[in-house]
Length: 112
Image (cartoon, rainbow, N blue to C red):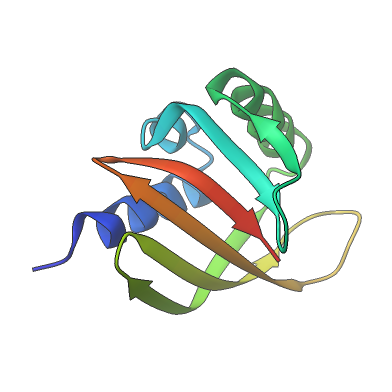
């Protein structure tokens, strides 16, 4: 049986690829923080800032897609290695996201 952390990471990835903003946001806590790794500089704070950030992303890049290359689960953290394509202003790029889960919500995300 998949752990809740892995299920949440997959649900948000699937919603991201469908560009379903409400389903995407449903797995995040109201006070979620997105940060650049390493460090703790917050780039997006709270669900409303996420709504703006990802709403704009989905609007501006309708072909945006993240392909999961690898996933590692360690305790309450999920590390996804992705290939992001479909952004009109850039070619394919690899990304790493680290999701921290508390309860049944993603509370922190770090991007490398």
